[in-house]
Length: 432
Image 1 (cartoon, rainbow, N blue to C red):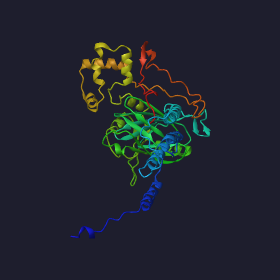
Image 2 (image 1 turned 90 degrees about the horizontal axis):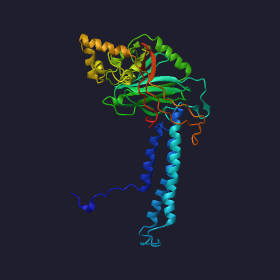
Image 3 (image 1 turned 180 degrees about the vertical axis):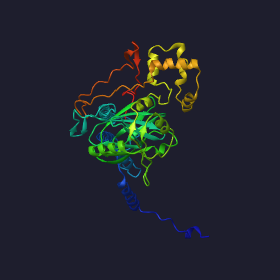
Image 4 (image 1 turned 30 degrees about the vertical axis):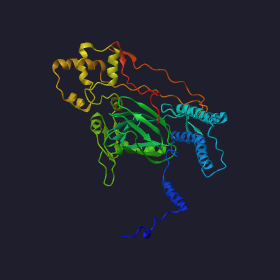
């Protein structure tokens, strides 16, 4: 064993070499795609600009504080005998004004910027521009997409085109987009970083998101809210294409022959998405390949929103309509069996064999509602007259609460409450 004097001493890397090594590692960051700060969509770009502006405002405080911390540590070091030492100093009016006034001004600026930008970028507010130089034309109709979060996949329904896809979102560039978002069971978060901020998807509720894609290209969307075992694979391909390419894609989906994915391809064409097909799709599954449906039942999305896809289930809108009538009394007791929403409860309700008396009661209850799922009212807010970010000119006042139910006197000559589902109000949902 070597004596301590003869052991080799550890080599210490010079400080300059350490700095050079650290800087060399930053080169690996050059391959990173800062999509949040450089997205393809104008709404996401405005959000990225807000992040940058907020960061710069905060740096006006952070940088001087860090610099002064280093200066004080150096100036008042033990070796500096010329530094004035005053152990009895305890107050300076000038210093107090500087310490409190500067952060207060920054907070005021941040508050004003955040308040105006939050309203301008409200996901329920329709977009007023395609980009910083191009306003939205008055005759342009947004593309509507109905989004359903499933375990563990995403369903996209194009109501105008009559098609649907699973784990694939295709949108045209330069056209306003309107998303209606809900969930089949648990809470999720819909997020396409290239397009806009995330917004929650909740069962029995509908949230809205307005956005636009300005550049053609492929990106990835995903769930930003943990929802179980298959959460990590709950991702979907997002394709922004030209108007012509979008039209061709829709035609190809509409005319495709139902078949499984071809060799070397995960894509599949599955025919018509009706309630029976949806109930199979709704079952939990992971790593689901892209699937396209050439046709969709017109009332499927509203049935999902009202949680009544399963045969014999009462829709949430029907339940609210009955509640508005003051209930059904004793005759509605059996109807409680139709309200259970858990998976086991739904399966059990479909399998029961009710007696003749119960069948008469259920038939009477269903005759009142006719199992017609209601649609959520549109709480979208129009874009402001001026898109000036710092002034917010033209921002409309918050909408007044609207009645959940409207009146309809067309049913057996008696005024009944028309089924309308409960939406998530714009003041409760915001981008993150």
